[in-house]
Amino acid sequence: MTALTLPRISWGEPTSNKTVLLVHGLGSSGALMWVLGDALAGAGWRADAVDLRGHGDAPRAMDYTVGAYASDLLGTRPHRGGAWDAVIGHSLGGASATAAAASDPAWTKKLVLIDPAILVDGHDAQIVRRSQERAFTDNRIEVVREEHPHWHPQDHELKIDAVARASRWAVEQTSAQNQPWDVRADAARLTIPTRIIGADPAVYSLFTGEVADGVLAANENISMSIVEGAGHSPHRDRPEETIRQLLEALS
Image (cartoon, rainbow, N blue to C red):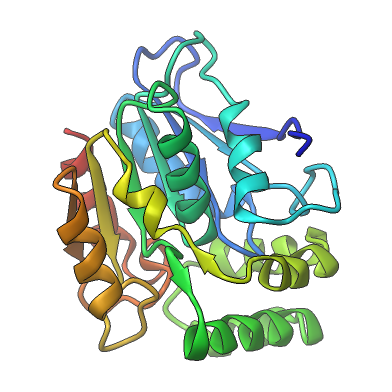
């Protein structure tokens, strides 16, 4: 597979000695990680967010397997070189970062996964596909506001922008090409400290139940906390609590 060079945006002092990479989810963009980037910059970090292949300003390609996404991520490095101090991935970004870190333990010193898409099949796969179809079919800000009235206004704006700039074909192919969509074996191989910040199963979570139990039991390097009252995007549903748990994981 051919790795792509991913565009990035940044928060924080360029000279900071604490570097973190932010990796967004399916149908999203680096800009939609803004609330985490802003908070991390305030805590002294240099935060870089990428657009994944097929999303935002990133190059388009034919391969949209999790392995291809991971290959691109492995090509990213902090401004000072060496390893990232931490990588934070949401949903697809969490799955891709897991595969990348399992392939190269020297890529990052720590991993934080926000409701990661470790296994997507059956009912969850249908929910993901329907959600993306709705987003591309009617990409009006009024629709996003109605569906997520508690989100910050900038999340509403940036969600519209992310869908407009993403390749619908790339998003569809991400589901189609990952059969099965399963990176549990990669998670089991992680050798670095990994914190999962999970969504509330009572709202909706991709990482819960037997899948979560199995991943946690298979690797002592992985721990988990849950953002109560948050759905699949805790950093947008309950940003303050998500940031609190994130900074705790990075301390």
